[in-house]
Length: 187
Image (tube, rainbow, N blue to C red; front, side, top):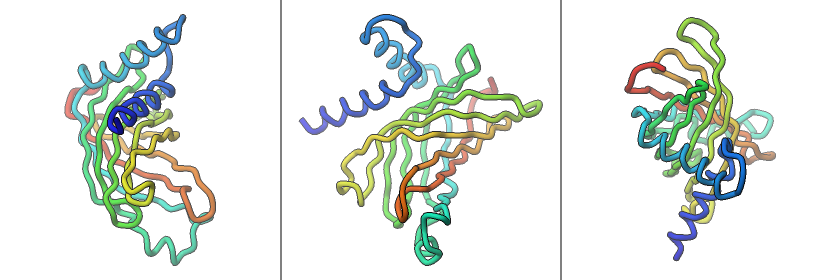
C-alpha cells in the first residue's frame, strides 16, 4: 500500500507541474503531461549527471555551519532527455549523492527548460525540476515531493544545471549544481 501511495504521489507531483499542452478535460491534460514524461524516457538521449557543488547561501547560514557541511556532493545519476519541436528540453532522471550532512540522498524526477541562444553553441535556459527525494533527515528516507526553479548554461553536449532550494534561516537556501553530459548528438 505504501508503494502505491508513493507512486501516486510521484505521478501527481510530476503531472501537476508539467506544462499542459492539451485543452479540455483533466484527463486530457494528465495524458498530455504523462506523455511528456514517457516520451522523454523512450525517445530521449542518455545523459550522465554528476553532482558538483552545493552552495549554502551565506545569508542563511553561519560560517561555522557552512564549514561543517558537505559542499562537494559525491554522487552520480543517469537521465534521458530530449528537445521538443519548440526547442524546449524535457528530461527524466535518477540520481544518488551525499547530502549536506554527508549522508546518502536519492532523487528521481522530471526537468523542463526553455533556452535562449548566447552564442554559436552556447545557450542559457530557465525552467523547473520536480520529483521525489529521499534523505535521512526528512522522515528517514520517506520520499518527499519537490518542485524547484532551475537554470542551465549549455555548450554543445555539456551543461551546468542548477536548482534553487528555498528556505529560511538555517535551512534550505541552497543552490545545487549538477554537470550533465548528453551522449547523443546536439539538437
